[in-house]
Image (cartoon, rainbow, N blue to C red):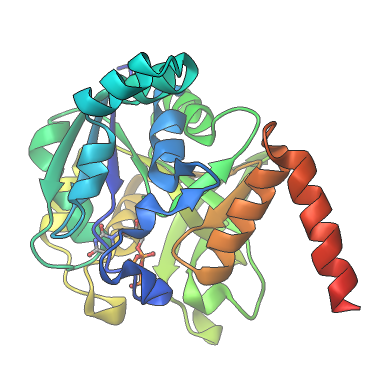
Length: 290
Ligand code: UTP
């Protein structure tokens, strides 16, 4: 079955980037001139996704506005002959069929994904975390969908992290199948030192079967007293195994101060309009540091 649906959980409180997130969703942080979540929606669309459910919460209406038409702005851009900008903003409204659903309490990533049950129905689907922007040659989500089609098993995006940081993430038990592709039989969220299974953590993307909803329904709150997606995926990994995909490209955690800054800077370095000026600026800043 072709995967055409994706869920973007974007209802986190963003406490690591306060005070910016007091009234501004981190998913709308601009990476130069495009909000983070647009990169994520574009990755999904270029992976063959046609229908996207974004899980939001109170105060995140501007995400919905961003994917809507703005007639008065369009009229202004048309009158002032700014046709390139006009095309650019109109296109955003037609990227995909985008639906929104509110998570009424921040009960965790697992709970946010569970809310997608009736949207997803009985089909496999992709999950793209709303604060993880991944820049890569081929879309990571596309490669993961191909792996799902090949193995007919859920797929998790993984990356190696440091020994010091693994306890902030999850840790997965793996057996390599081929370059970048692993069989995953177990996983744990926020492991203590003695619980670490490998330095590979689940980051930002997964492709799941609808079986996950039955498991999530019976998943109790775990680490941080939140319903953890990892705890539910562990059940599926223990039962039938999952596929771990060590994705290529750079992942930026927009939900962290340094991650948001790193993403903006790297994207600025590739941006045709400001690249040269930005390099000049960086050189100046560097000179002043000496
Ligand atoms: P994070 O743990 O990175 O997001 O969740 P957070 O809760 O906003 O982080 P803090 O407060 O800075 O620690 C990973 C993804 O899951 C979503 C987040 O929006 C993010 O995209 N999420 C998390 C939800 O949708 N609902 C939740 O209850 C928790």
